[in-house]
Image 1 (cartoon, rainbow, N blue to C red):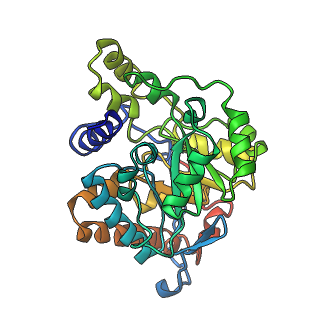
Image 2 (cartoon, helix red, strand yellow):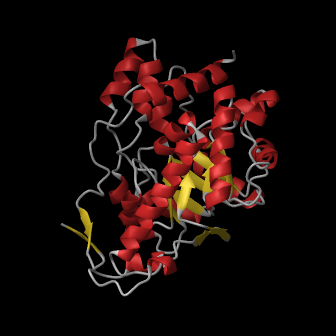
Length: 341
C-alpha cells in the first residue's frame, strides 16, 4: 500500500476508534443562548431552512465536510454520504484527492456524482502542494474528475508539522492561491482543518480572490492528536499531544471573520455536533455550516443511521426557528435573537 493510501486508512481508523477530540472542551458556542419565544405565531410546516451558497440552492444550511477517500471503506462512506446529500439537499466535500491524482485507480473512491447529480460538490486538495510540484493542472484535474462545482484548498500547517515527514514549506503560498483563483473556472474555497482562520488572513484571502472561507475552528477533531497517534517518532508524538488543543475556537473565528469580511460567503465548522449549534453558527454570521465526525460515524454504521442523523439535524434547526419565532434562517440574525449568557 502506498504511504499516502496507508495514511488514509490510519486516519479513518483513528477517527472512528480513538479519542481524537481536542482537549479544548469548548467551541466557544456554549455561552450563547437564543431568546425563547413562547408565542411564535408560526405554523411548523411553513418554516423554511433552505438557503443558497455560491449560487447553488440547498435544502438546508449544511455541508458534509471534507473527510475521506482513497480506500474501499472510504468509497463506501462517500457513496452513502452522497446519497444522503442528494436526498436532503446538503452540500458535500470530499477528502484530499492527492492520493487519487498520484494513483488514478483510486480516484473512483472519491467520485460520487452518480449518486448525487444535483448537489453542491466540492473537490479538495492541500494548498501546500503548490510548493511540492503541483500546478494548475493538478487542481483542475481534481475538480474535473469529481465533476465538482468548487475547489477547497485546505490549510493544515499544524497537522503537517506533527505528521511524520509532513509537507512544511508554506512559504509564498498566498500569491499561488491568488493565481489559482484567477485561473480556475470554479470558485475556490479556503479551509482550515480544525485550528481556525484568524481575521487578518480572512481579509487577505478575500483580497486574493477566494470565493469563500471555511474558518474550521478549534473544539472538534484535533488533527494534531490524530497524527500523534500515527507517529512512531517520539518527538512527533509529543508534538501532537502538546498542540492537541491549539487554535481559535469556532465561535471566535466566526465573529472575527464576519467583522472583517461582512459579505464574504462564510462556512463555519469545527466541533459542531447538532442542529442547535448549527443555528448558533448561522446567527453569529455563517452562511453554511459543516459537520464531519457525526456524518463519518453515522456513515460507517449504515445508511439508516445517516438518515436518522440528517432528520435529527433538520428537526433541531427547525425547532430553533420555531421557538424563536422565525420563519427562515435570515431571521436568526436579527438583533436580540442570540446573546451571550
